[in-house]
Image (tube, rainbow over all chains, first blue to last red; front, side):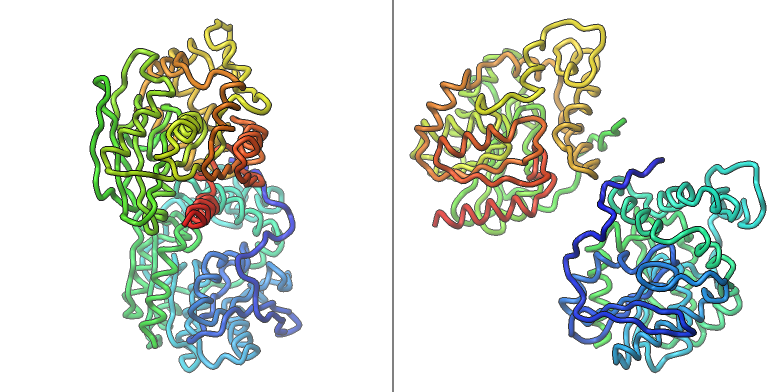
Length: 299
Length: 298
């Protein structure tokens, strides 16, 4: 499927612009953040996998900022943040430390965090290891290694082996990315939005993915994920309220992952019928209302 | 290839508070009523290729502020499908509108007509000023302004061709052979904006609720016959008029809307980047324009 980018290359106009923006720096990696609104509490929208940057929260920011204070930052590797090329720079703990540094820079004592997909791992680290900073945690389509099972189609090929085929999930492979990064991006994003009539979210997400490159994305793959045991141990240390939102048609992270995360953290699981991996993009009103309700329940 | 939505009706954001049928010359026409504000807005049916669900993005919003009436055109939706072309004359649709106003005890209404709906709307506004408080025309289809490829295609409607590509699909023989193919093409021209797959799927689905035979009958029915008649009706229209026309309309030229606004002394709002049906593709923009216009009448 060829995705034609109809949007201009410059950033699209926004419904709401940040009230404040800036950079933090850790080990000479600069991370770009934005602050919107002034309500209470603060909600920190965490970066997801560096394939996308903070604009993927664009359907949440204008709504939530009318009621709460909203902080976003671009994950290292995309957006206006730096793009280190060594794998160590993309460890989950680096992203978590960036989040804490952003909270400090914005003088945010405590926040409710929202993590999407891989953002669930850094979110889990924050909730378990920085309980004094985290008031509550919401996870959308989380990539949670501590329970549930992977989707069968994602276990056929591994990332490092060179294959004769580049069909389907065989594209999820370093050798393919080096030569055909965009081909993989288009495939991967098509699996992110499995709902009909998703041409706009697909176009947006492909555009964001093309703001970074294969080298950066390969580095993120070489960085260590949380192991199942680590993830389970972290869950036992989470004591804040937890909300997990997972589409029952998620074609990237099995819904059994989200269910396991909710169970192990004692959180609530909301299953969205017919939704794929990114319901906050594809069905923003539904997800915004869930997040708002969750935030208000913490007051 | 467009896959039509399942044949059962989709769920609605809002269901009607009342519904019923009017009957004239044995043809039943189905109407719906929503809300109870003032004034009443009567959404006219467009070409019978689709039906009143084309207003689905307007009804729930406007019914929060006004009383809203819709009806299905003869030939589609829950209205009857007469066979003879005369039953689809513009004067018949206008007559249906008056009957629906009577049946719903509506003395006066603001009318909204889209595309072909502008023809019946103009007949109502010019000939029944006591019933029409004001008129909104969206992408009006009238013999005014410059012709589009559609207008040229109509001329060869009955001709036989080897192949039917592009606007050649606007052809009686092709409709009978491959109606869905025509519909997919036609609605791709109605919704020229990027990311319109949902609007196209809905419209194709509504069209498949009727038949090519019905649509051929509408093509042979007498409408507003020429520019002279259109001008005469327009200059006789005295009520406030708002014309909304997409500048990239590929079905009805933007110059048609501009001419209608000028002749009626109305206001023209040009929507940049919009196609033929901005009320379906950019409903918030159009809803706010309609609301502002209706409130200006108070």
